[in-house]
Length: 60
Image (tube, rainbow, N blue to C red):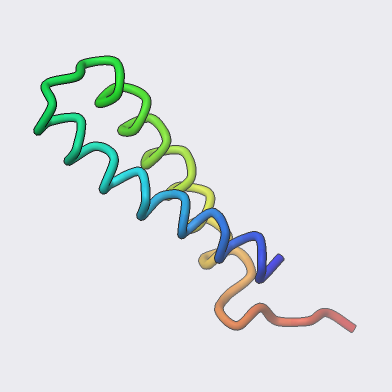
């Protein structure tokens, strides 16, 4: 689950850069999809950190 959290976090960060680029180019569709990606993948990342902790706690 740790690697998945890192991947989701990177996707969320790259989506933030995509959102900024969408504002520069005034591309509404790009802004909408990038903001949605930030919310979804950022939410998954934060929920995983809250639920499993960082580093994740291994159950016995």
